[in-house]
Length: 435
Ligand code: FAD
Image 1: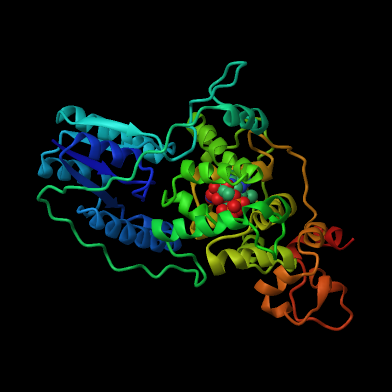
Image 2 (image 1 turned 90 degrees about the horizontal axis):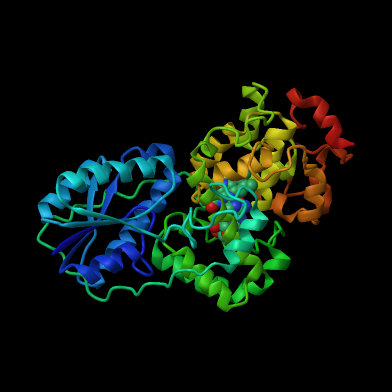
């Protein structure tokens, strides 16, 4: 018997339920990845990370006697061609929540039905399956985090599956991995399961300090595991189990936010592009110039600019800076959160639909679990979370010579500092910011 395993968001050999089941139930296994040529344009950073992850996956599969079969093109058409060439009777893949993934699953189901191939979907993109936990009062999904966290913490998680020791590939051309794309951010992390596991091991040494340091912008005290979770180089369940074993309760709570948004996106796919609350105030200003200043990290508010420049430099941004920059775009500039979603989605290595749109809606006040009138004063945030100004100086070289927290309000410095003032087009708010 031959099985095809279609890798999508699970680029790993450890705790990979689809791969483990194929190895247990078939004599020959085709580990397959289909590169969708559209991704490179969507996000050069993620495209590079993906290629690195695929190269690493290929070498792990080769160490086990197998290989990664690579095709470029439409995932459904290519998968069916490979299944036919290999004489497969089974196709397994990880279940996913986005509309794109669900369309792919449903097309595969139709095609497999016609060709007498058994299609099986497996868990693994989240810790608890989206759709598994339902609010006790009824309804499709939890809309509020705290009760979800309670249910999630008490739920029985599945067991991790063993890493296959030996994989036998049928006689099939494996295909070349295209040249490594350039990416856009020089400081972006490198992809791959090996790198992800190395970082997880190192992180577990620091996890104790998370509660105290996770909001400290210059201290950089978060795990930076998000890109590895995004591509499934790390199993979220394996990360959660390891964190549990190290007593990392506050960190687990953050992992739960990820599961939370996945189950929201599963039940309410509109979260990607439509305000979750139908009556949310969703009227925005059209101001391309202000948007461009924001994107370029030239708003004139150093903490905002530092976050946006970290995004470009590293393809990643500290969560506190994501909150500050997102609130600045939506609450101060009054610009539509969907512009922010698109900009983050282009640059972020961890950019994904449920977390990106879910968090943007939370900040913009249009989301499921949100306080619509919350405002963030970026200057106060700057003094609180970057008290000595080191985060700003790290990412805004124009201000590297300003010492101490004065860097947060260059307009107050008596000697001339060569730095743009807060956005002209946003003068009233700028005055408010200075007050
Ligand atoms: P840690 O603090 O070490 O947390 C561990 C893990 O928990 C993260 O890797 C992540 O998987 C999860 N997590 C933490 N905070 C959140 C959160 N607020 N929501 C959901 N999951 C969370 N995260 C993404 O993975 N992809 C996105 O596209 C994304 N877009 C965001 C957009 C905005 C406007 C905001 C405010 C937040 C966004 N986040 C997104 C959430 C969060 O900022 C990142 O997950 C986190 O900064 C990743 O860094 P880390 O791995 O060091 O996190």
